[in-house]
Image 1 (tube, helix red, strand yellow):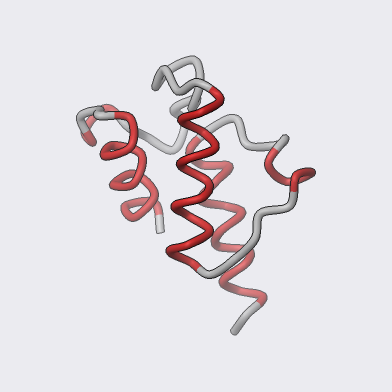
Image 2: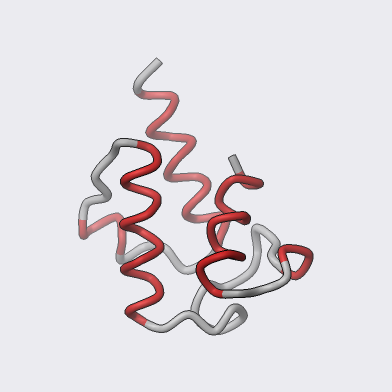
Length: 78
């Protein structure tokens, strides 16, 4: 799951995937602004067929936060 999110982030933010870790902070470390985050979340929602609630969105600070949310969603759908 991390590799998929990393690939999406690298493409969206035009970053080298090698610098993206689960601990990377999306805004501070990767330089994402609010438009980048919105586009990223729309891409994730489309790719995974889910809707990310606003209250969850507010908790995403790191790449690992996004991955944990997606893994939790995937586990719930099994």
